[in-house]
Length: 141
Length: 141
DNA sequence: TTAATTCATACTATTATAGTAGGATTTCGA
DNA sequence: TCGAAATCCTACTATAATAGTATGAATTAA
Image (cartoon, rainbow over all chains, first blue to last red; front, side):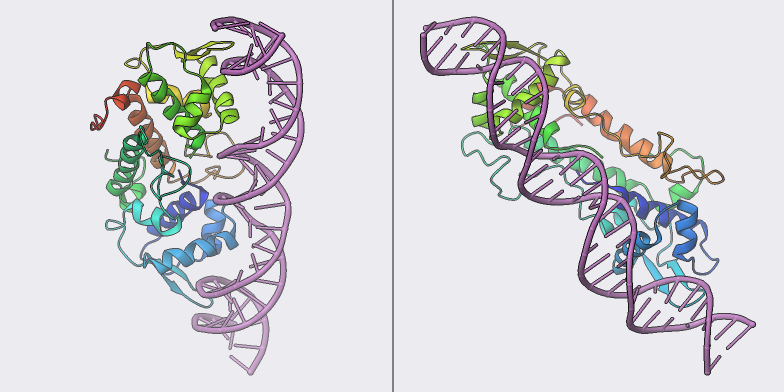
């Protein structure tokens, strides 16, 4: 499974942007300080967020990043998938040597991991960026 | 997040054991061949499964492993947690330098990861080993 | 007694993560 | 106009974890 700091950082940074929505571009330096994430690492993450059109950049002094889409419309899954490759628990989908390549009995647990993936993805699909900034509130299940 | 081949192998191997339940001990060599997992690696995994009393060992020739508990009573979560340390998406629980150590604004996304953990764990709690061996059947959600 | 097995421990190759480093480019504001 | 603040771009790297290997000892059925 792949859910690393990169994915977490991306969500944290996007939540940070959402909090400062409407107040002009937010610099990565600020986010870096507030969220305690290395600046250079943030830069790499934001390249990808920008590629996916989740944020818009403003170059030069007083520049920074702004949300391209409103927090109500951004799903957590959009953020995660922008920076991580994907959420997949299985190795055995691509026809590899290891995994469920058994000719006779096919991978007994194949369904299980399939459904776990769906389970996790559906979680990320349900939660919106907006849900995070409504503070101290239980996320909708 | 931690869901590695070790966890997957453990579930696969336990499912294998469940399929051969009542037919005497199953050797790791057999499981190794059927599931295409390195024997020495399986040995390490089974040490842990045994420590958690999920399986029972029979030493010597014609030996092997047997389920200690019936498949209806073994949750996938039992297996995963026996071999992996735990399923945790957060780094920021233990008072570390990185993560949500911000004094003023506490980690905005803390709740999110918390709930994701619960979400995933509840999935593994619901599914029993028995559910896997009932073949080609949709697992109960 | 031998082969098949678990048990135990130490070592290791590979890979991915999580960064660092260094510089180029753009643009605001004094 | 110029410097500082910012994004952009690419290459490199330390660390740690995963996923195994390797080796041998102990046990037991046949």
